[in-house]
Image (tube, rainbow, N blue to C red; front, side, top):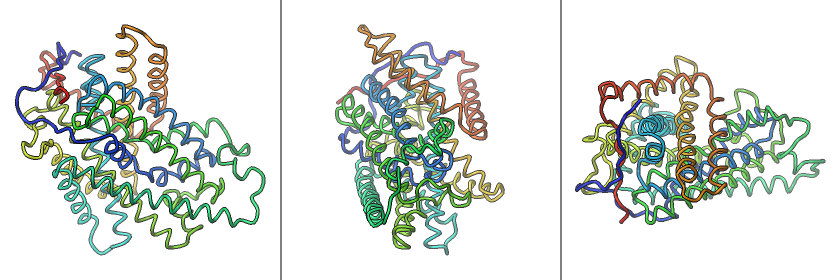
Length: 466
């Protein structure tokens, strides 16, 4: 399948370009908001039940897996500091057709993320203010997020800093409450402090693998950092550092959170109807109603921040694909001359998220909540295709095409590819079906635009560093 006969890397002639205004700490904060400092809280109960209580162990294993991919992302961003991210890396190093397929899979991941977060925000707000309808809150949140991202990347970065600070404070309050709870226990029993890592009564390799396939969701979104490559000062250094540091910080912070939670709850299972609220139940056990409500509100803020940052990254991905002609260039490849942001892409993602969140509520009611669960899992379909693609691109660039081959550039991307492939194959059946439908639609779109792939579709071009 030949989508293009050649690959180009040149500066666009004329027209507005993205502005380089983000520093290293801006990237780290944006990445932490996308991932969320509270990331493991929502999936804690599911992981605990699957892994026999070994939540902290699965979080650490998942961190190692994602760090391998984070290194590949950072190294490829150093080679190609482009807003197209994995789409550009794979297309440049392997084949334009594979780059297009990677980019199309990423679109699914990036546009579903804000949709799911907006739906969660609307539901969480109704627990506090039940009077306005779900649809009112969906429209309000999607409009606000779109308006914020249209004000420019620096405005989004400042809001992300505030959100990240607020979430971090609540995490610290939770850890302090857990420490106080454990301190006042009269007895601990054998293995009390080590069982969260290894409890011989419940440890089974198959259960650990099952838990790790869910725990990896803690890190989903770190790749959004690479989509900001054209708005970063010194991108060849800062993208690599930020991507690795975000994965490392998120992993260590998440491990500390779930370790504290396990010390409070021990390794007992959660009833099926209480799995999603498991962390809030732990907060109530050690801090009463006040900590329970504080944590609920924080999860609302966390998902709002994640939606805001995910829409920001999605707009940059669509812009990168539009500029490379994988999507209609006149619409997606344009930059607003005043704000210097991809306005059309930002607005389109906002509209899709708003309509999709409304549709999700309708189908969830029809399917008894099944649509929401499938939507959440489907986010990973595109994400792991991109992860595998970036590891493959890193292998080709730094091993196959390198003048001096270093064994580290063979081992890291190969391990990253294999681990991501294993996780992708173990996604839920419904998510695999939905993702396959999306990929089929993308290939058909490419075939129509190129009259059966007889003409060029993809070009890879990025402006030079300022």
